Length: 177
Ligand code: AR6
Image 1 (tube, rainbow, N blue to C red):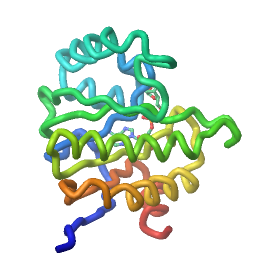
Image 2 (image 1 turned 135 degrees about the horizontal axis):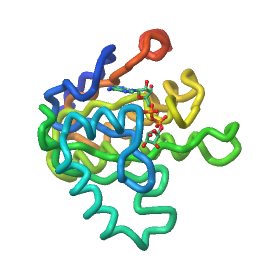
Image 3 (image 1 turned 45 degrees about the horizontal axis):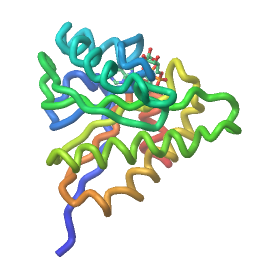
């Protein structure tokens, strides 16, 4: 029996989605920032930052941490309509020679594995690294799609994946690649 999975692309604000988990494009401090990270913290309320501080404190000895690029951690969602927030850290784009593609793929893969581990079924991703971190959108979209396709065989509990695009360019790319 095969597992049925739907992969969707939507244009909009990830903080509005009532899915099991939304993914945050965080930074390695886990203490908030701008972009989607700022929007998620604003919508969740201050308890999210308090929990992220506790997570960061526990992980203070992780090399490149508290959350190095490519890793993912999970928190509650507080005032958000989703159940959980998975915080992952995308790579900063330095031109492609600093392992950026593998690190970006790891963000998608590790977020899916974490969602599976805690029994979640639906997960929404923003376009990780394509804002402040400067990853070229087309390259990032291809990696996001292939990383999800290559991981879902290992996550039978995940039945719905949503790529949430905030800008028209990413929305067009996800619909044409
Ligand atoms: N819903 C969905 N997508 C959004 C939203 C939203 N509400 N707001 C922005 N985006 P960015 P990064 C899109 O810069 O490049 C933060 O300061 C945005 O249009 O949020 O991974 C962190 O703390 C873009 O396509 O994340 C880090 O320091 C995508 O989300 C740093 O930025 C990612 O853009 C991470 O940079």
